[in-house]
Amino acid sequence: MIIAGEYSFNGGKEVIESKYANELKEVKEIVSLVNPFELKTKVGQERTKAGRMLYSPRALNRVFSQLFSERGWVKKKVNSIYSDKFYLSGYTASRVSKGTYREMDFIKNRLGVEVQFGKYAFMVYNVAAKMTIFHKLGFIDVGIEIVPVKDFAREMSTGVAYFEQFAWDLEQRGVSNIDIPVLIFGIST
Image 1 (tube, rainbow, N blue to C red):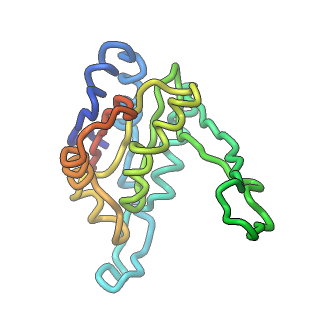
Image 2: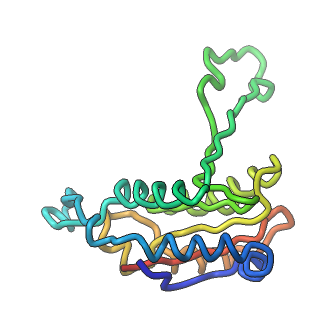
């Protein structure tokens, strides 16, 4: 695969190039090692893509997981203990937080990486919430988000979000005082 686009959110590119050059090199190498043509294994079910062979997000995620793991990147899972203190008087929940957690795809030397081939809301959540949470918890300082560009997303199931819309929205949103530096890669075949 290739990195077809990059968007530096809150100075992400500059910080990562200066402080995480080795990790950045590894991320770029990992992307280049993924052979997407072996991963066009999903038969389209949607009306507009019925019967077409599509790229499988699950298969892509498995390959990325293997390649990151082989290089010492680790997943980080934190339990989410939800409070009942916000319930109104008289309401009692039977199960508030049993088995709930948040997970960062890959972390190495305080650089967090998320690979996202899902719906748009997950891209936004990763950068605007999850990475901020993992920073606040002391696990990462900066992040990289890897997402497909539009042409690549068209070869997946409908509804997969893509780099161009994500970069546009972040440009319009602007940076908040709680945002961490993030470099967003748009990848393609």
